[in-house]
Amino acid sequence: MSDEQVQPDFDVSVPDIPLPQETTATGEIADEFDAAFRLAFIGAGQGGGRLASTFYRLGYRRVMALNTASQDLATLPIPETNKMQIGEGGAGKNPKVAQAIMAERQGDVLDFMRRTFGTGLDRIMVTVGAGGGTGAGTVNGLVHTARELLQMTKAPSDKVGVIVALPKYSESNKVMANAYAVLSNLSTLVAQRLVSPLIVLDNERIHGLYPSLSVDSFWDTSNLSICSLFHLFNTIASKHSHYTSFDKNDLLHVLDSGLIVFGATPLSKWDDPTDISMAIRNNLSKNILSGGVTLSSGTVAGAVVIGSQAILSKLNMSHLEHGFDQLGRMLRPNSTVHRGIYRGDKDNIVVYTVIGGLERPAEKLADLRRMGNVSVEPEPWS
Image (tube, rainbow, N blue to C red):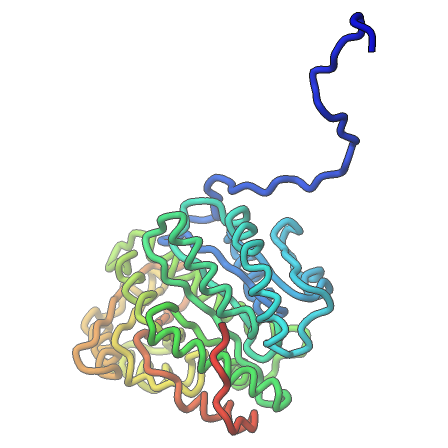
């Protein structure tokens, strides 16, 4: 090299290599409505992905779906950037397969959650189907990863909620055994105060409430039944009422209470002082979305009445108070019933109910164990 040659100002000439884009945490992501809590949703497996995408349809934007099978992700109506595939070819209804993949990819999942959810979270909800492989095998790992993210972002609470969909009784023994293991495991996490709320969507119960649904509309109706009720309470808790408000702290009390169930009771008459109380007493146990739970074990409830202005202008307040009192009598002694009364845009009146602090769903667990031919308690999943 001659002295006249110019020395380059770099050490290595790097070829043009395609590089993946860097994934960094984004700023705060806004939902498409005002709500009491900024919630994020992780849908794992086919059933969990459907639940998460239902929340996306309702306007939630902190939504991601995770699966071991690309074909299940492909059908979800959420942005492709919100989908994460771990593993290849699915888990074949074997939770242990998905559990091992989740343990290996936990760091990647955490980074994906940070990018998808952004900042300003109040709580993360994990949604899974209990009978399959991916949702059942990843739920524990997702709960712990979500808690880690909440702690990293200094969220108000590190409690993680779970919505678990139980299979219909017509499915296989293997599916029932998986569902038993998942529900038993989640009940333990509730007792350890790691999971709250735990919301059980019982597809056998949904089938009984809506017996004439076609195959095409069943899953959509099932998912909307729970997602829309949860959404209703989250939005109502941010609204003012001309009468009585069900506020953010009321909802927080319910969300922190462990196992919760939702129900809705339409009122056809309200002239007699006992009309509302009888409707609540007789219809609530029939209309909740989860079977095999003991409502009398509940310690907290939210009861929100939404009626047209024409109806509310005629409704005797003492009749309504009697109905609220009747709900309290259905729960444990000294329970709390948070109340709300709102004017709605439909020409009817409905009592929407959420009951929390419920005991372990022993009856439902016994049914799943029997139908799954479970003779030995499964080991806890990590």
